[in-house]
Amino acid sequence: MHWSSQSSRMLMFCYGSNMLARTKNAIQRVQNACARYIWNIPLRIHVSPFLLSAGVLRMEQRRRLHFASLPFDVVLSKAPSYLYDKLTWFGDGNNRYHTRIALYGLEMPLYHTTAFRGSFAYNATKCWNNLPPPIPASKTCIENASLQMRDADQIRDRGWLKFNEQTSCLDRGFVMP
Image (cartoon, rainbow, N blue to C red; front, side, top):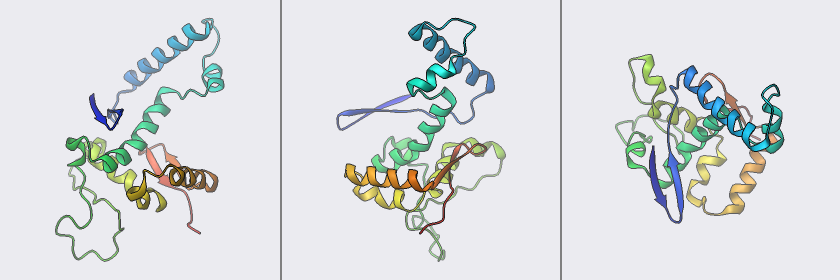
């Protein structure tokens, strides 16, 4: 876990795409125990309705949401450098012959094993390249909160994003108008 201060806010960067099932279950049990303590839930009663009514995401959903936003934060802040340096933009190398590349696209890293699919570079590139066009294009004016809210409302209302269970990242689920 790494802490980095960014202009009056603290960002936590952690990554765990290759988490074991037993670790996921243990983390969920901790959240359930905390919920039982906070709301005084008896052992025979399910915790999920209490979490849902309070608007608390389960730990698996929380981890996925965190990773979906992590590449965006890393690209915008260029920090931490050990994560940002793993990302390669189109046009940074010898890909001058590519004619159909996205303006804000990341180049997929070469890999030779399936274990590499769990790496930050692979998953962040896959998630970033699957974002709808309004999101990467707004990276230059992300400080404008109204633009963020408008884009978030538009993306939610039109159903542009959906979560891919297999790749643990956001996929396009839309047709641009």
